[in-house]
Structure formats: C-alpha cells, structure tokens
Amino acid sequence: MLALSIAIIANPYAGRGRGKRVTTTITNILREKNIDFELLTTQYRMHAAELAFQASQKHEIVAALGGDGTINEVLNGMWKTQAKLGIIPGGTGNDYARGLGIPRDPIAALDVILHGNPVQIDVVEERDRNFGVVSTLGFPTTVLEYTETHRDSWIKGPAVFAAGIAYTLHNLRTYHVKITADQQEREFDAVGIVLMNMPYGGGGLKFAPEARYDDGLIWVVVIKEISKLRLLRAFPLVYFGKHTNHPCVDIFTASHIRIETEGELKKSYDGDVMGITPLDARIHPRAAWVMTNQKKA
Image (cartoon, rainbow, N blue to C red; front, side):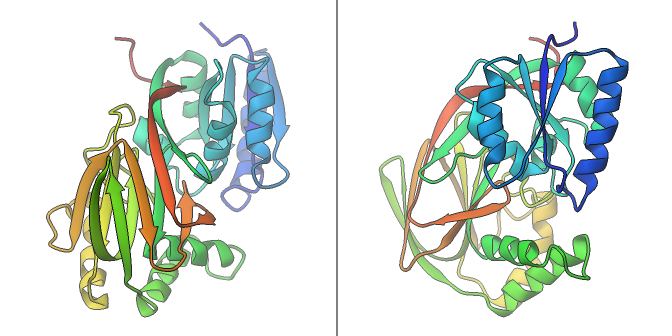
C-alpha cells in the first residue's frame, strides 16, 4: 500500500549538486503517481532537523534526500516521533543506504519508501549530536575536515578523499585516551577512534563488519599507535573488513561509551564535523522506524 503522506526534506547541495538533480527527478515521479507529498528544502546547518520534527507531526513518512549528513539531521529531528524515516541517497558517502540495504539509485530508493516495510533501528545519543551510523575522533575526523574544506577545489570525487588521507598521514598524531565502556575503563595511545552503529562508514569503509543497526550495541574501533607507513599499508584492508585482527586495532562493544582525551579533539557524526571531546554516547535500542526493502517477519 502506498504511503498516505510524505515529506521530502531535500539538500540541493548534496553530492556537489547531485541533490538538486535527484530532487527534480523524485518530485516529478511523485506528481505522476499522484502521491500526497510536501517538499521542504534545507537552507542552513541543522535546518533539516527542524524541518523533520515539524513534518513528523503531519506526515506518515519523513524522507531525507541528500547525503549521510542530511539523513543524520532528519533522524535527529524525528527519531522520537511516530513518523518513519525514508532515505533517498543523493550524496557521496551513502553509508546509511549501505548499512540498511537500501538501493543507492534514487528511483529504486523511492520505490522502497512507497512499497517497502519499516524496521526499527538503534539511535546513538551523544552529548553534542545523535547519530545512526558513525562517530569519529582523531585521524578519521581530520580526513573528513580536509575533504569538507576542499569541497569546492579543483580536486573532485575520490581524489579529494585520497588527498585527505595523504594530508592526515603526513600530519599523523597520537593521542592518549581513556575510554569508559559500560563502566570498564581502558586506556590507549591511539591515532583514531571510530564508533559504529552499522558496518560501513566513510563512504564504504567496513570498520565494524559484525555491527548491525538493531543489535543494541555501539561498536568501538580503536586504531592504536602506529607508524605512518604501517597505517598506509593497512588502510586498504578496511574496505573489506580485513583489519579486525591487525595488532594495532582493538574492537569492543558497549551500550554506553565515554571518551576523554588529553587536549580537545574534534568529533564527527555521520560525516559532519561538530563539537569537541569529551565524547559521551549511549545507545537507544530500536528507537526509530526506517523504511527498507526487507520483508516483514
């Protein structure tokens, strides 16, 4: 059965303009199908969260059209409501779609919203911003910062990400961190930390191969002190989830994570850099509904 009413919250700037093209395609299809919908366009950071909360009061489905950052904002705005989240990938990373098995083709993703089934997903609540996929500290955040600041440079696509990795490796730093995981304290000298709610982050990096969106766990991936050359050699393993047994990687799970660092480190949430340490994250099991193409149990 088709959804009764849909709000489309679109970021036209996602994917270097791809969001605008996808929005035109999707709204044309909805009009052709005579489906009741409302188009809302984001204008500033976290605007999507405001729009999502408002839309959740009158629409059955609130769909995010854009990259993972846009989806994150929409999730932040409506996860405590009765509305269901729809996902129409229009960015460059699309890790929400990967983790939930949603097609990255926008038209196929719209079909999931119209004809799919809702599932419940965990939401991780953090002191500065909630997330559904990934939060980072250290070198992964530095890579994100680099790609964001060079968004409009002559370097495009995967080359920007590669340049970000090269820059980060050149300036690689080690940080002393104390992690309290469900009241158990651990201390590390680390170059980076990744908190995962799904397997993929960073545009297809399989940081936590066993993570699942509804397992009630935060997966913590610690990249311990490591040389630049060794990190460069090991990095490609992450794309295939083959890094989990590396001696410089420690992976564990918890429902509540607190990370304290010597000096302030920037944090990221689903690809957006925001806030500084300490990081304090707690998982809310199956706290939001998302439309997927999974069959009903």
